[in-house]
Image 1 (cartoon, rainbow, N blue to C red):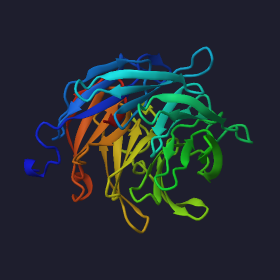
Image 2: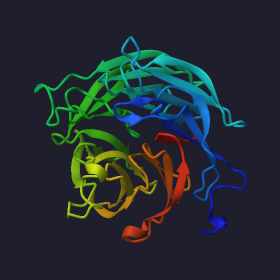
Image 3: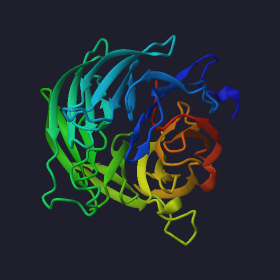
Image 4: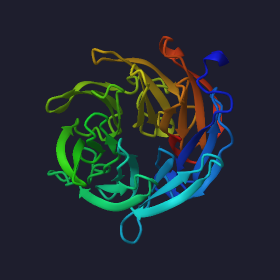
Length: 378
């Protein structure tokens, strides 16, 4: 595409912050020193990956109005991890610590700022809890912890996958763009729990039951706000849900991968017999393209979403790395970035939404980054 169509004026700069793992854990050999950063000025090219700040296991980061928020996926003596806030210096592109708070549970895995900037929600994976914090409207500093809700265990003791569903495991927090309710996919409960913030507290506001053993992990709202896309980590599926009077109801559910055919490049098992599991989901600003990453199979699945609620599989492309976690469209949506946790790289694909099938994504190259887990633009 010509430079004339680029939305980036000459000299305009974007920061890409990378959440990482910094130590060896049962599921990862973390090798990063902390939160990492790379510059971006368009054309699918990232600058050198550099250290933004030292922080222990900052596996998820999110930017909001010049502030970067990060979890520390740990469990201290008190059984809690931490969440921190950093001011992003627009000139030096460095991070200035604003403060840190205990997360309200063990191993926080995700956080998100409410659309009005008043609250920070945190999902504590091992703690089985969701925490709500007040944010300072002027500085973005994390204030007092307003509430912590601990998810109740399943009545039957464990889910169909007893190794992964032995207890509640909130894996994400996502704010509804219309109602500002909080949606929490819980992998252990096979459900998405919904909360409404009332007087600074998390009040139960609904529950979306998911297929047994699906292990809901991440979701993304359609730009119109009336549809959401949900990845089942354990079932390796993508489910479309539409807004109804009583909440969201399932419209369709499709596998993220082709059915096994004996070809090692397809199916649900990756190299070395590693099971394939769904990871992240992202939606284009037009709402017509949906992207999902799959670990084990180490690939990215692409779907076209129609106004009739149907998902049309377009292609499954190799991630050109091991264990793809987060994926992110560049600000101009001409490229897709994939964070490959176990091969220490971010791979870059060009995106052509008008192309048929396999030509939607084209591999361009890879960029070194240690143990990348999350990709956040600022």
